[in-house]
Amino acid sequence: MRISGSTALVTGANRGLGARLVTELLGRDAATVYVAARDPENVAADIRRDPRVRVLALDVTEPDSVAAAAAAATDVDLLINNAGVLGFGDVLTGDLALFERDLATNYLGALRVTRAWLPSLRAGGVRGAAAVVNVLTLIALAPVAPMAGYCASKAAAHSMTQALRAAVREQGIEVIGAYPGGIDTDMLAGVEADKADPGEVAARILTGIEAGQQVIWPDDASAGAGKLYLGDPVGLETMLAA
Image (cartoon, rainbow, N blue to C red; front, side, top):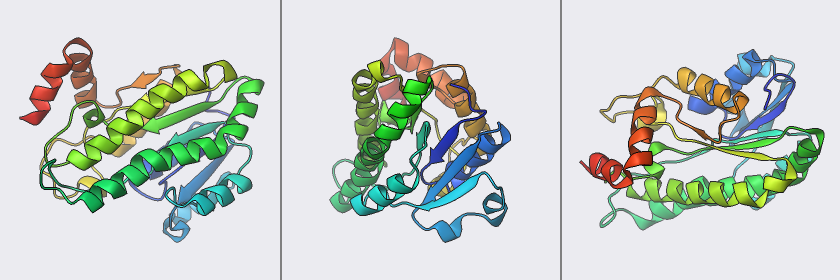
């Protein structure tokens, strides 16, 4: 799918990877970019000043908020489900309320948003180009112990991505999963680990979209681990568990 001339919507777009995706979309000549955030006041002033930007209030966990935003943005042909939360906790002792919150946002929120924008995406598919991009994570494929609830929520979103790909295959809508490793954003602040630059991750995601990739490994760590997963999924599980 071509980014130039597209009408894109990015959820969770006020900071972190979402904000970098917006910048990258504008740099690649998207015609319109809907910048969706739970608190639109947090969208940077320089982004707001771009005449191609439309700021939307959107809480992916609230059906009324999603419905209102979808009614205000009916021309989207590139939907990027980026909004996400991360609660820490292991599988035996983690706070189940945090696990439920992660599921509500990372899985059900992404599904709710996708369903709401399907009419717009179908229209784009008829015109010849439409795509849903779900920003997942490498650890959707094999968990790390301190993030068990988050990993499970992203694993559910990974499965949803596969189901959606089959469900809309005949409607001209591409379905793409992006599987980054750790990214240097507020979400992982304080976590000691190698982290990719969010601007580079955003650029690689959009390059993958333009190249027609259905699975995108948008940083060096995820690319290497992705190769391991494809050849030895239990090997990746063992590696990440350590």
